[in-house]
Picture (cartoon, one colour):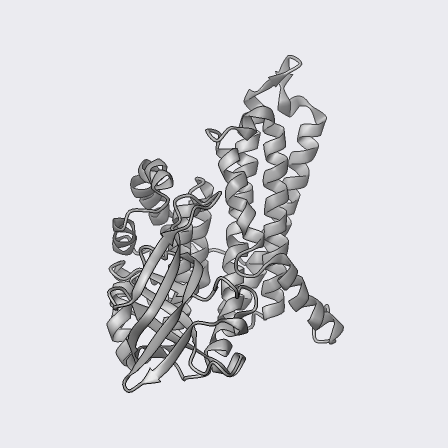
Amino acid sequence: MEPFFEDEHDEFRRAVRTFIEREVQPNLAAWDEAHLVDREFFRKAGAAGLLGTAVPEEYGGGGVDDFRFNMIIGEEFARVGASGAGLSLTLHNDIVQPYLLHYANDEQKARWLPGFVSGDIVTAIGMTEPDAGSDVAGIKTSAIRDGDDYLVNGAKTFITNGIHADLVITAVKTDPKERHRGISLIGIERGMEGFSRPRKLDKIGLDSQDTAELLFEDVRVPVANLLGSEGEGFGYLMRNLAQERLSVAVWAIPAAQYAVDLTVDHCNNRMAFGEPLTKLQNTRFVLAELQTEISVGRAFVQECVRELNAGVLTAEKAAMAKWWTTEMHQRCVDRCLQLHGGYGYMREYPIARAYLDTRVTTIYAGTTEIMKEIIGRAVVGGTLRSP
């Protein structure tokens, strides 16, 4: 079988691993305590070539639209338990980047993409609102045309990179009377009068990832910051959700493997009844089951990445990958913590932090229940069948 990764991916992996060893691991404890990474983290990631691998070379990017490079970043951050910091980059690369590449015009690309690649412009996406999560069409943030500007009013919540963001791709209602057809995407930039960040949210996990509330009070945003066409925002969001959900699935596999690796090490060194825990059959059976599930998940995720690169990944298949891998990840970490015994309940142990970090994965980017609804409708409708 043709190998999944090629020589250039191996070289990139070495570069990512070196970056993490030098710039992430020494700072991780301080970032966790501050509940966000240093602003300079993004610039250093840009200098190391970790941002915008798919951005055309004319804007300073790598010029290679291959999601395997994105995948490697997630794998390497998860491998050392740095999920919070790593997700700050994957939000930038995996989720925001496609909007800029596919819907920004030439003037917007020239204005935003060089900074996106260098890390001078940190990005976020403003979709979720206090009263609108899975129901994207129910958003209330409005952008009413006023001459050459939009006047934006509303609020967003649970926004990753919300504190550091210099550019927020924001879902707004340009026609509040409509649901889906009233949604547009506009770029709201740091420093625009009336744009504030009232609160950095206090999460139970992913400590170093900054998550914030955003508030827009009569913010004047130039019409020149509209992405694509007015009223087409809902379609743009739906087309990009498959990659966003696959990004979460990609992360779940190495994060689950990290938990198993921690547990094998602990059980090899923890004695019970005069012998290491790994000498007990139950321990080996649990680890065997978990490693099998991880291997099955990895094969399916790699298949999905191949299809994404080929432009044929469906929303239903991405939903399958998202719900199954994240539920597997949670089961895995829970069972690994159990094998740690009382030590697993102590925050000083990495497995405890992994347990807290994983809880949100079945919620963000679409809950497990929404994923199953997407798949179930296709099954009932006869559009999703095995080959």
